[in-house]
Amino acid sequence: MAAEKFHFLIVGVPLSPLHNCISIGQELCLRGHNVTVMSFADRGRQKVAKYAPKCKLNYLSLGELPVSDDKEEELVRQMLTSNSTLLQMSFMMQNLMTPYFDQLQVGVSKALKSGLVRPSFGLLGLPFGGVGRELQVLGIDFAVNVPTILVPPINPWASSFIPLPFHLVSPHNMTFVDRLLVIGGNSLLNFGRHLAVAAGFQFSFMPDLSPDMWRGRLAFVNSIPGVDYPQLLPPLVQYTGPVVDVKKMEPFPPEVESWLESVPEGMPVVYVSYGTMVRLTAERVAATLSTLTSTEHFTLWALPKTQQVGLPDTLPSSIMIHHWIPSARALAHPKVKAFVSHCGGNSAVECMAMGKPLIGYPQFGDQMAVCQRIADAGAGITGPQGGWVQAEDVRHVLAEPRYAVRAQTMSRLLEKFGGTSRAADLLEMAAAGDLAPLRTPLEGSTSSSFFMAGYDLVIYAQLLAFALMFMCMRCCACCCRSRNRHASAEKKKQ
Ligand SMILES: *[C@@H]1O[C@H](CO)[C@@H](O)[C@H](O)[C@H]1NC(C)=O
Ligand SMILES: *[C@@H]1O[C@H](CO)[C@@H](O)[C@H](O)[C@H]1NC(C)=O
Image (cartoon, rainbow, N blue to C red; front, side, top):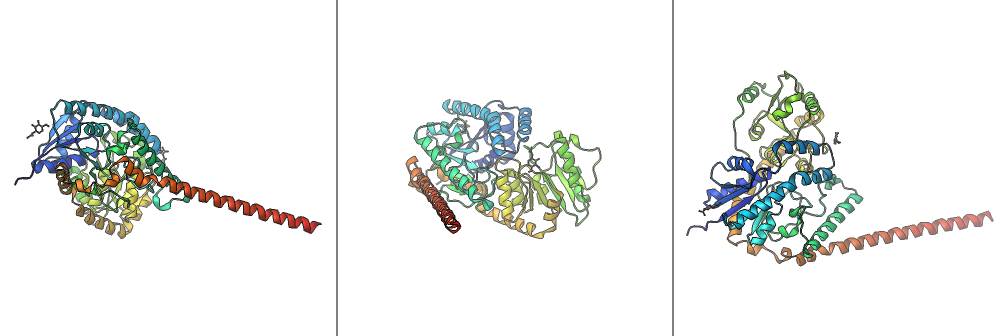
């Protein structure tokens, strides 16, 4: 008997998290399912062509980009004038994501209600905005794809010991006060969110925050346990490893190819890329150039044309700067020995998949947590958020072979988690209703959420009461002692 064929709907804003969903869509399409992608304008269409080259997915544009390319570039530049992740995120939320969310929800709602597209199951990339709610209302079940790791506040199961991305401490070196803030804060936040859902509140500002959108659903995390923080997860949350074809080798531009050939044998090359979102100022470009000019290594730097204005006319022969370098091919090149990166989702996965040590300088969002986890695994090092490449960091990573050895191990591990094929298997089962036995009663409803986590607050209150009692007792003891001392001193005087 031929396996049942389904119609899968993929929806996402045309930013990098959509790549992963399209890549899973390609696998579904190759298996004979009907796959429709909804996103914006030609940017979405190009992403479909690029990440699903082997199979034809239907593409439905939900209209023009709500924020133009130029405006987006300007917004990112403005965002990076602050180092506060909280300010960065609320700024981007207001100016970039809200216009996207509004148009996304309207467009998807129209397309589905017109009956033009009749999906049997959805796959939503983060952030999905009001689309989850639309599908829920129409009774279409969906899975969510998380491109990197699980961190609060969006994901309702992320462990409470993991700091919110804007609380810049690592779980390794939190003080007692940090822990109180992080664990207490996360628990309160979760409690509040469940309470809000129970009371019928709609998270219109950031619909992904609603636990209701996640509860009892299939969710993919495109990394591996261990790169992600250890946490207690319901059975429908599944690690897939990388789902984009990281080993897809596009050719180098000829000038990059011939420069790489000219690098003397035994001379390490450092590959530098801050991705497509981070915009370097002319001063920053000049400073980075002088930092990377060295007699100990060569440098291959992917830098968009618009950012090349600060460069001198001639570069030292040890440095190659080009606006387009295929990252996977660069990282796979045997002469490339380390990767200077901001730990954006795609870069981080390519770095690990190709087994090259990381020299990380996270800039915003979950990048700090991602860089930190790679560094924790011993496959590189990371600087502070908002930092820029330092010569001594590069020297250090090149000089210590242990980073490269560990990076190679990571690369072998990453391959073992199934990628697109596993994601597609699970989606087929979910669409057929075969995953129902994994839906535990314990995470299926608001009341069970309180049952599972609602008592945490009572425990914290108890601990707090104990701590206060202890402090009171100490205080009293001190008081008594000093009064006694005082009294005996008085007696002596008499
Ligand atoms: C696949 O989906 C598209 C809508 O995106 C629809 O027009 C088409 O008829 C569907 N094909 C099949 C074979 O169901
Ligand atoms: C952000 O932090 C880094 C590292 O601590 C620092 O070098 C940089 O100047 C800061 N940037 C801003 C805009 O405050």
